[in-house]
Length: 260
Image (cartoon, rainbow, N blue to C red):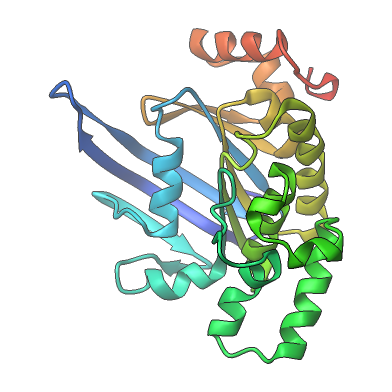
């Protein structure tokens, strides 16, 4: 999964992580190989329990792989380097996980303030991101409980982007939204990814959503990537019956015409 001539922002080589299952078996991910260049959005797609979120937690350093290597901008991710390398990542999870006692502005400004940015620099960056995310500036004074689900996700995205990281990690960021808002934000995310030119790893169980948002899709089953490619390639040439069934289910719902 590479782009010729472009150095990957994120590289996974033979990464594995195993857990003891409740039934006495072993579950987890790997071995997984993945390379994500700047300007590329890759969606990790698959059923619940296939390892999508586990992979993202490995990349952000919340889990340590049993074997294999992860590199961010060429540097190995280890227990020692993870706290620093996380500054090169913007992480968005379902429902945003905003601090409820802080306003939207304070949530976005939290890390820059901790790093010692002055008020003028923070104000400029927050205003810039509000325009980029198409969030009315007046809403920045509200608490998360006073915002809609879509507005909270925009604030969470602003918080992930505030330090201008080269890598974005998004774990089911639209999963809790109603269908109309979800489709609107899918288009917004695709626009933002194109405008920013960052590397983005996007986790979703919704193949149609992945087709709208991502450049390439990696379909996971039982912790392994069973097929990777553009949405149209997956639809035209499924690698096996599992991929064919997954694509057929998506096409029966809201599969975008351009991916057919």
